[in-house]
Image (cartoon, rainbow, N blue to C red):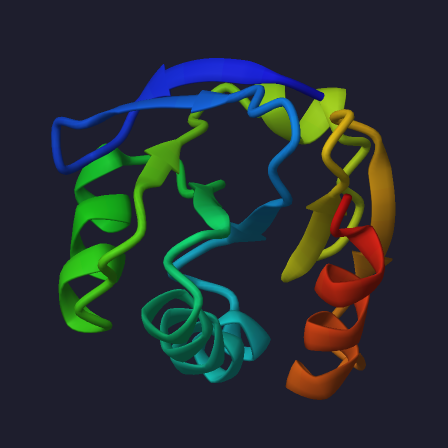
Length: 129
């Protein structure tokens, strides 16, 4: 599930960090449950800068992805996936969904909207090399 993309804030994102835990979160502006989970993932990013966290917006328009990043003051990169290429690669069926990748790039955990912040933290701890 590695990929290279430009984030809506202009930074370049590379999800292929050997030896590093990576969190990939799929969201969309129109997704009500996504709005509830974004503050928690932003808080996690602020608390654990050693973890690469990447958001993937499934919105049709890049403008919506930019608004999403702005309205939640996201400090982690948010990639716009307008053609759902990344969603297909990760086999995303519902939003929001969060993937934790271990230090070898393997999917170690998948969590949907029913999972809690503590579930995610436990998954990250378990995935650490």
